[in-house]
Length: 437
Image (tube, rainbow, N blue to C red):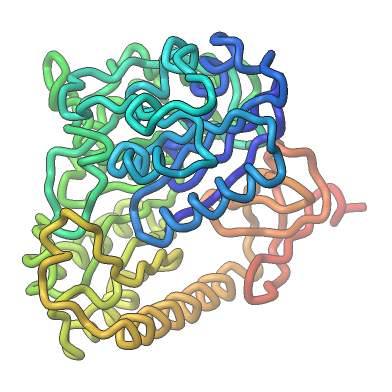
């Protein structure tokens, strides 16, 4: 599901980010490189869009935001990059509002921004997007902060070697490549030293980390190394993982490391075996259920989220019901539901499609199942004590990533609080100091 975040103007540069946590991290690198290239000194400044290509809706939202930015900033230079720009460069280059289109590799280099052409150039000159599959390495770009964020994201991996039939992302990100372990550790040290209490490791296919590095270290070894070498990290969190690739060290860390947060977001996509096969996923429903059961034994109270697609081509009512049932069978709490969106160039786009109203109805049913599960989860935490990382405006997240309202606290501060109830959306929390007073 595409999310949009807008960073404040920094030296005349505005970065608008759509999509995943990896994009959020890369936007910080982009801002720095654009400043190095001198974009902040341009009359009218510059607006950079870091786009997402997961769904057609994400692309539509990006185009809508670009048009609005031109209306609001007629003198600004508008640059479009990210996954949608990588996969559909010609469509963004054809937009009159756009001055430059950069690929996912180009966006991380200052020289790319220095190539900003004059107004009136043709579409070919506007687009500077190379073959992403020619990229063999991912550098460990260092950032000192994630602007506007209480937690910091660190990239450990990029790209994906798998070809799920619904997914356009490998064509936007290229093949899997890992950031060297030492560079990840140094980045975590820098951010922890700058006061970030929580670090989130992120990537496109994070559990494939290390396969291309000397000795082929796995994600679990990276996690253990970070926790050992960076004692200042109070909370380490993983973004989305593929459970079928979870290694023994990772499971051991989940069981034994209290600073590794008890929250995993799983890339499930479906709860039906036939649909999983047609998606070219590498797991079956029973493997997902067993994984959640096994991890709960290792870390009681761990919270699971998941991505699930509703209305995949050929999905029957019975197949959909298997996805609906897996919400309870896996004990999922934070559900991201995607109505199936055919992406041009993917095998799933050529499969027999369901009617859009059926897709929407199934997505609504899945969201309702997710909301019911989430409310049960909120109720289960009533009467407990939680450590909450304050994000903004007295709102924060528990270790299990559940939203909580405290009404106090500075962003980035971890507050111990008692949970008195919930309002269906967030926990109602009372900080211990306030309660004692």
